Length: 231
Ligand code: ITT
Image (cartoon, rainbow, N blue to C red; front, side):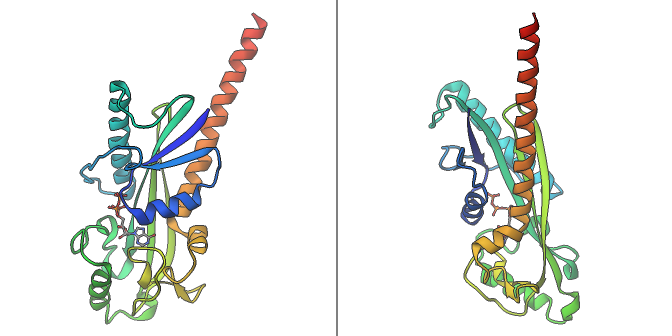
């Protein structure tokens, strides 16, 4: 059985990292766009986990409807489909957790990130270094091929810098300073970021849950076969 993961995201930065993190050659990853699916659910949850599941359910429903109507634009023969999603954001302690689940929408969804970071740095002008702690948080949601729902959280700790540095990554990376590297998360390589990031941690934990789910399915099938042998 082939494994196909459809990722319920329209964020190109996320999908680039996700493809680098999911390295199993038997697993194909398609973005929603590549899968010909569009869904723009109201992310009205109160936590990263709730919003991750809202996104995954919306895409799962569209895929189910398209499958029933025979209008899916990819081959599902011998394929198990899993829908995954990522709801993430930047949690800044000195700002009471802002922008948090509103990170993408903060100061406007389409607002330039340099402007967003500058405004945050202005708000934090008088915050001393030791109180500039923050973390990126990611909830990865999933709906497995049997319809079961799963969600896991990952975090990456850092400090809000006083300037914007680096070209890698996306979003708020250029002012997210990682003391152990002496660099922002936009200055380390993508490989280094994926090894320590909120998204890397949550996604690897979800893939481990998925493998456990697969093994339990295989074990159940073996038990059925063994029962059959005895009849
Ligand atoms: P989808 O809902 O389509 O996945 P989105 O960008 O709207 O895309 P979110 O609602 O999860 O996604 O918002 C996440 C925001 O948090 C993202 O747009 C960035 O501003 C920020 N963010 C999350 N992870 C980040 C990372 O690794 N580096 C920099 N910024 C990040």
